Image (tube, rainbow, N blue to C red; front, side, top):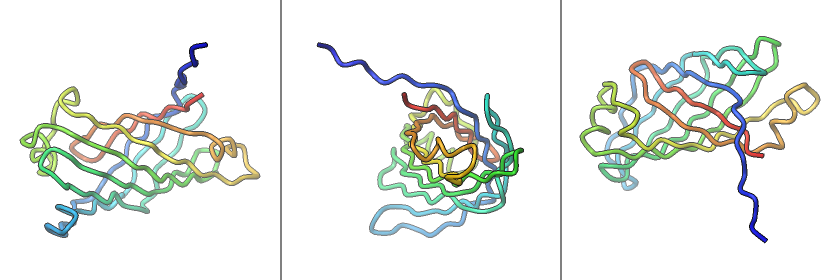
Length: 155
């Protein structure tokens, strides 16, 4: 018997706006940076709203072609419910392309491997409680003013 592979359902697109990155420097774990999250939008077939001015994207560059990203922030949906996003991502590209992104330049997304596992937490008594019991995957794209994440529910 062949196992059935998981399928994905599109949930939403999150566009996160960030402030200029705070440089920490080269540490034992690689180059460290923090990008404060200052706003944005979320739009999808069942949800829409805004990204609150709360949170940050903690970045680690252990090698010249690899970035580990941990972004934590809050969505406030149009129905007034809030969602906590805790996103773990990996971004890999040619070192020259990663350097261009680190400098705030736009790089063709087809040249970058950017995948993530966002965890979405909602009030368990509200209409979005299903998010607490769902695994999500996503694709990312670095924009000049922030990041665009396409979020999919795994079923």
